Image (cartoon, helix red, strand yellow):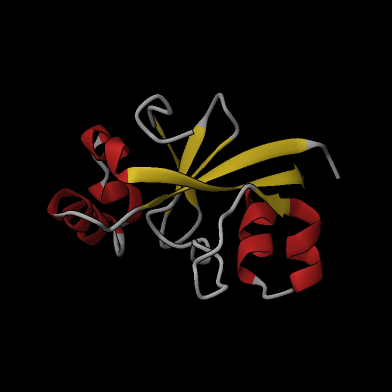
Length: 120
């Protein structure tokens, strides 16, 4: 396993523009992506000691709390005690700081995500 670190970005659905971006991406992923949507994303966590995108997907979707706790940081909790993020889903963005990929219905597609617009 490598020491690669990936930041995960998800759409915050708190306004009409974000809701529109979510609807465009939730089923089609990168096929619905436009770079102007970047401002609708917030960083929700960091996955460390990752061996690649498929590992990031597994950690954020398998339900194994030990695996999650050993690799995921930088997330916040809601007032109800839940993680303020959802599992890695179609339309989410994973970035290693140099390249970014959108989760598609099958696999990942490299995109030109502007991290400057997305909340670091």
